Length: 354
Ligand SMILES: NC(=O)c1ccc[n+]([C@@H]2O[C@H](COP(=O)([O-])OP(=O)(O)OC[C@H]3O[C@@H](n4cnc5c(N)ncnc54)[C@H](O)[C@@H]3O)[C@@H](O)[C@H]2O)c1
Ligand SMILES: [Zn+2]
Ligand SMILES: [Zn+2]
Image (cartoon, rainbow, N blue to C red):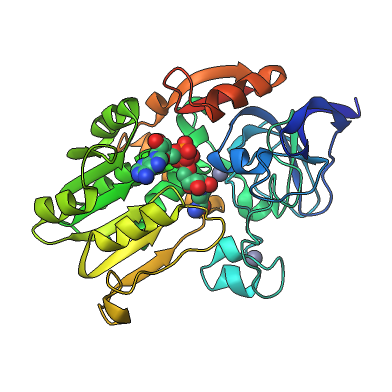
């Protein structure tokens, strides 16, 4: 069998499952048989033509699978091992990786902006029967026997990203944290803020189902931006502004509100993928001398990150399975995109089985 089924991007709103060449592992690489994957908000940006990738690419970047082939030089794994691979696949050897910026991996040399994100961006991705894993030694993480595919699939991207919103924001025990947007990423940021020890977590969204889930995932207060002055309410609830705000949508509106809702010296931790310009209003920015910190983070990846996240699930600190609300086969992935993209039927994340 030299072909496989895969979801191929052809152009704006043109994509679907077709036969493509099946990958084989070269030196330092592995091939996994994908057993579960999902669709990311970023995949929606891709199919809508808002984030450019080249036509002909297999998309998707959230793989769980079983090792099918191991290239030369990859040690410590066996064919048949169940593995989780992060959305971001750093080489582990370049200046960026060795300086702790794996997501900005330069593949063996310096830094490359967003260079660690390869699946479904610059190389074929995970919405397929088989997936070629580059730099396999740095990116295959064995899944503990006790954990199911559904318990770990959301760690590849949304949990790693969402938690990093709280980590990069430097949330400290006792902090007040506001999270702008409670989509899958924002919900995981809410969970992350709780894990980091926030005392008060305020979740903001305009979707009642999601606000309801936000409470279940750890938000103490939820605010519907459609019928409340969110910034004024956060200032009131926190006595002057949040210690950390997390932006989890990627719009000027939420970015600006996240800045305005901060206390002086607070940290805005931004996760959203923006398009066009993002502007800093002079007053909210205190003319540039308000001791604010603005940090951005691309999903942390690599095998050590995935191992740590699986430990968090294994020891029952968090359970993300309630976020997997819908299930589709790979053959029906277009329907999965429709339900996820149009946010039908209370969908949060969809499980896709090849
Ligand atoms: N930094 C990273 O590594 C990384 C990784 C994955 C995704 N992302 C990005 O994160 C963003 C969020 O992803 P997602 O999958 O959670 O998106 P999503 O579209 O599923 O959810 C967005 C949420 O925002 C809410 N919303 C809309 N307008 C709002 C407003 N004005 N105020 C508050 N909430 C509002 C919506 O109701 C929805 O619940 C996207 O831009 C995605 O590309 C970033
Ligand atoms: Zn993603
Ligand atoms: Zn690297």
